[in-house]
Length: 440
Image 1 (cartoon, rainbow, N blue to C red):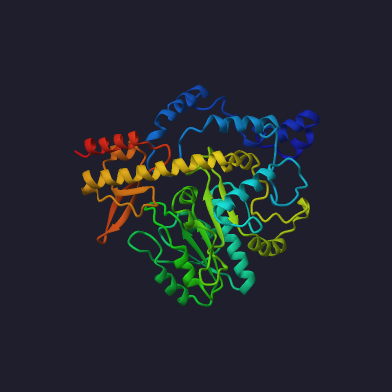
Image 2: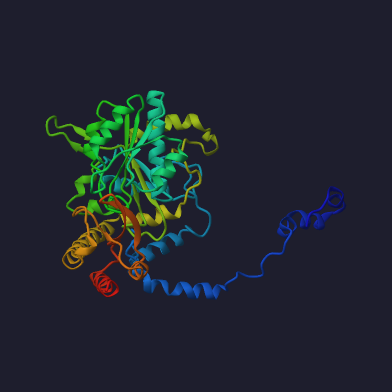
């Protein structure tokens, strides 16, 4: 209902309040009396989902049911008020907050613990829990862009491959960065020789490089040390998107792959291998809500904080926060702290071994019995097997991801299985049996 000025002025008291504030007055229409589906119908449809979850094979989400210990930890957090009223993790978890209703202590502790897992020293680590892996990547790219621009006076160009997660294309647009596409090897990993060619062709610009540790579809790994060998003597920042592989590799014989720094055998000194890392919490770990780790070193953060403080005026919260997001979720860091305990790390080690063993089993069975589907596993570090697309029935039953790949100069539809902790040997056997029956 639209009213003119004369009608508005004629209203007084409660009538004026209703006319100006009630949603019907603004929308000019009545609100729906109820959802198109009743609440009970919606819940009834969701009730069947737990029975289907073990068949999700196409996407990197750990759907294993969480332990009783996790839910007991949730109850402990609830008992002190967390999730009963509005907590907020605004600001830097490594600094005192003017607002006491936060979980910064848990957030700092989990970053310190995971920082140790990735080889950061306790006196040179900074980070926080983000809303998602994409959010973590955004903070890494923004930090790299800010530092390189302040060091050189020139906006950097960002380098990544087409095998990188699609969010990189979104983020380079959001951050107004020019993308330099780097070629790949046959397995999907970055071709560092092509990176060198591209760096030479853009020598007047600093380089913000995003390396993918476990590409989305093929599960390939960009060489950190190979990339660094091409960045020597250049103004550069190297960020790792380790959304999935970064969760489990530290619990395998390949843990050294992701170490932030290593010892130079010739000098005995420490050599930094990258600048920041992003890891998703809802992928390997099975955290029941999208979240991400963002970890960098303290020196990077301090240099960034100086520049960040010039971009905005944070007097309102009495500190320069260092995060793009202002108000931040306080529940997620407190809950995810559970995944940084010694018992949780032990469980992650067991899950990582079972996951890679099951991947090896699937690849062997497909190689032996489904050679016509051309199954590929890029390396023993990968929990992905990709192959020519099977029947639509199999794709639908197991929620397989499908992409077109260039094979012999022709675009051919492929699918993949991502073996997560909820995927047992029995589920894989059923998948293989369905593959046989539906392919006839």
